[in-house]
Every structure is written in C-alpha cells, then in structure tokens.
Length: 153
Image (tube, rainbow, N blue to C red; front, side, top):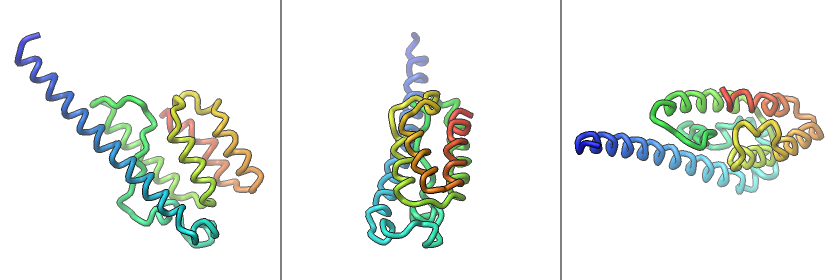
C-alpha cells in the first residue's frame, strides 16, 4: 500500500471511530437517564401512563433520542440508515405508555448481546411478552410483536 493510500485509510478509520464513539456516548446517556427516572420513587410507585407520561416524558428530555445500537458493527455506509431506523423506533416507542418495570426489562433485552436475527427466539423477549399478557397491556404486546421487524429493517 502506498503512503498516501494508507493516510486515506487511517482518515476513514478515524472518522468511523469518532462516529461510533458518539453513538456509544449517546447510548450511555440514554441508559443513565432512564435509570435515573426508574430510581425516582414516584416513578416506581406510579405507572407512567397514570402520570400522563410517554416514553420521552419518562426520560425527562426531548434531546435524549433512542441511541441503543441494534447492530453490532457500524460502517460508514450504514450509519445514516441505522440512525434513521433508530429515530423511527424512537417515535414508535414514544407513543407507548407502560409501567416502568416493563420498559426496564425491554431495555435489558435490547441491550443484550443477542443477535438481532435471534430476537424471535429470545427467551427474554418472550418473558416480557408473557408478563405483558398477564398485565393485559395490548399496546406493549403490539410493540413486542413488531420489534423484530423494525430491528431487522
């Protein structure tokens, strides 16, 4: 490889690492804000729907978008597409109002090391679904049924 080619490759890698770093930083911010909301006793005692809060309200900030990466490897080519998909998922999640405990488990399942393709077979996903069925939350059941479709699209 020629020296100028090597510099070009290094620049592309640096740009990609920077983007991945931003993505991971936003993901940590999201998880920490969600954890802080769950730790608040009022949120633990009262479902968000009764407080009149959706998913974004629970986070307490409009700027906290859903940054959890559903793909294990980001490349420059798919970064913008993935970010659009995450924003779409955020909008869909934002319309759902459920108890904190369900969201905590749902986030745990999203944050697990399972491959996206294995979501349909994920025991954790079905555990959440069965708990939602017991609670009679049809909206959450609908989101859970749709989850593999948006994660893979």
